[in-house]
Length: 101
Image (cartoon, rainbow, N blue to C red; front, side):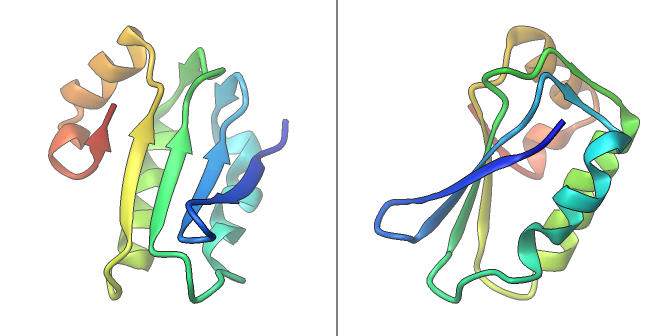
C-alpha cells in the first residue's frame, strides 16, 4: 500500500491518490505529506477513486492533516468518494470539516 502524489494546477494543488484500503497501514506516509510541502501548494485533493474501505484510523489521519495545515490557508478536498465513503464521512460529520465531492 502506497500513496501516489502529484502536483496539479501549476503546482498549487497536491493530489494524493489513496490505495484501496485507507487505514493505519499508510499512517507514516500520510503523516509525511505535509513535512516537505512546497510553499506554492495551497490546496490538497485527497482522491478516493480506488478506495473501497476506510476505518477510524483514516478519519483520525484526516483530522490530524487538517489540524497540521490549519495555520495556513490550505484547503483540503476529499474527491471521487464512493457513495459508501460519502455516507461514512457524513455520519462522522466530516462533510462540515472538508469539501466532499
